[in-house]
Image 1 (cartoon, rainbow, N blue to C red):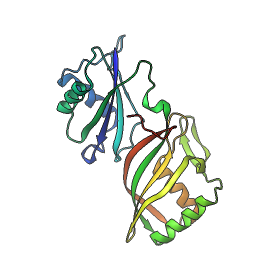
Image 2: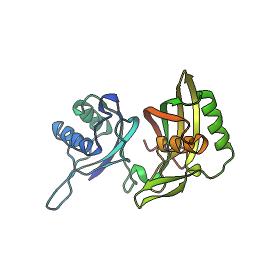
Image 3: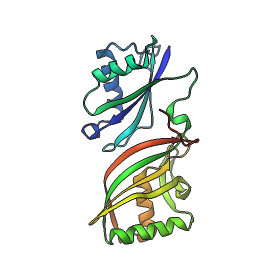
Length: 229
C-alpha cells in the first residue's frame, strides 16, 4: 500500500456539497479513472481516503487535502493526471505528493488556518468597527464565548486561538474584506465566523449586526510555519 496526498481547490460551484457527498465524489472519480484505491476489510469495505477537517457548507477553499491509499505505486504525476481527468468542475487538483512511510495525516500537525472573509456591517461604520475590535484584541484580555465542541457547549476563551485579524483590509461602503488566522487542528479549532461573532458581541453587544457573505480558506500552517503540501 502506498499513500499520496492530494491538494485541491473547492470552488464556488461546489461550495454547498457536503462532506459525505465529497467522499462519494472522490470514490466515483477514482473508479472512473481506474485509480487503484485500497479498501478496508470487513463486511462493509470503504475506500481508504482521509480528508482534512470538513468545510462548512458555503465555504470555498484553495487548501483542501485528501490522503489516498493505493494498492499499486504510481508516479506522482500519473496519480495527478488520473484524478485531474475524472474530478468534476469545481474540484480542481493542485498537487500530488507521495507520503513517507508512517507520515501523519494533515490534521495531526497543522496548528492554524488562514481565511479570507467578506462581511457586511450594520449599526456602525466599518472603520469604527475595525478600530474598536483591534483595540479589544490589543489588550490581550480574555474573550469568553459559549463555544460548541465535541464534548458539548462550554465557555471558552477564544483570544489565544486568534493569531491574526483584519490583515489585508479592504473597506467599501458597508463591507469589509480581510484575512485572519485562527487555530486549527485536532486539539484546538476556531472558525473565523465564530471568532468574528464573538468579538463583535464583546465590543458592541447587540447594537451591531455582522453578516458574513463569503469565507474562503487560503492555507493551513504547521508548527514550523510551513504547510502540509
